Structures are given as structure tokens and as C-alpha cells.
Length: 202
Image 1 (tube, rainbow, N blue to C red):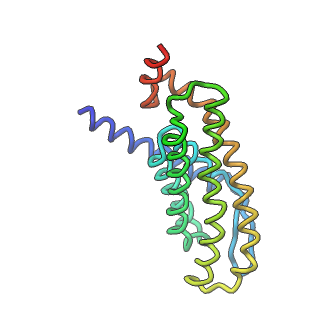
Image 2 (cartoon, rainbow, N blue to C red):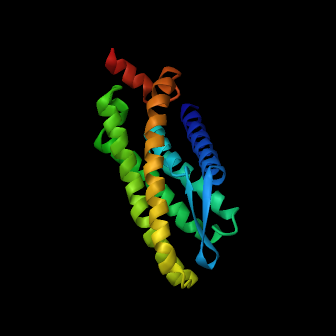
């Protein structure tokens, strides 16, 4: 029964993160039209897999962000062709951020303070740096080889700029929200690691 409750909780967390990432990507978005009927955008969707990874682990954060933003692509005629790329990249944002947070810094065991803040910044930056490099790169080859769009060269610079801007904004937002949410969620025992942390502190 306990294992079933854990599984249900994990599914609920992924679903919540997916809904949040969909909203942040779809409704908190400034779309920039590009040549050839393409577009790029400034949005806060990438914040969600990072925040989810810091709070619940890389798998939950990555899956939630990937599902939510992939749905955002599927419901948008301009972005629908990019849905597979989106799922892969957003999943790895969360997975990388969570791996750095948990395996490198053991962030769940860190008390509030500069070390925890530094660890959250490093983890967030790692996942988003991956996306800032590979999103424009894969997008370029995706357009060039799969879609055969000659506008790939023209849109590359725009995609690099938008992705880099999104990375900086998403990193700042995720770290700030994590700093606010983690103490409150620990107090409410909404994080799996919260009881263990309290025992160690005592």
C-alpha cells in the first residue's frame, strides 16, 4: 500500500509539473515570427523542469517539463513539427539539473544558506546550458535535414539568442522559486526528503 501511495504521488507530481510547464510555455510566451513561416519565442517553460528537478528529482522534473511543453507544441500549428525534439531536450534539462543537484551537491541534505543557493544555481545552470547549446543546434539540423527548410541559416541566430535569453531568465526564476518553496514544502512535509533532513538536524 505504501509503494502504491508513492507511485500515485510521483504520477501526481509529474502531472502537476506538466500542467505548469504547459501554462508557462503557452501563456507566458512572446512569440517572434521568423522567415519561412517559422517562429521562436521568449517563454518561462524551461523553468519548470529545473524547478521540478530541484524539488522532486531529475526524472520527475524532466518528465513533467517534457510532457507539458510537448503538448504546447502539439497544440500550436507552427511548433507541432518540433514536438519530438522538444520532448527530448526538455527531459534532459530536468535530468541534468536533477543529477547535478542530487549526485554532485546532495542538495536535499544541504541546510538553507549559501551552499544550498550555490548548488541550486549550479544545477539549474547545468541543465539550461545543455538546452542553450543543443536546442539551436538540433533545431538547425532538424530544419535542414528533416524539414528541408532553407531558412535554417537565417533562423539559427534568432534561435541562439532566444534560447540563451530563456536560459538566463529560467535559471533566475527557478532558483528564486526553489529558495521560497523548499522551506515551505519541507515544513508541510510535501517533499520526500524533508523528514530525513529534520532527523539529521536534530
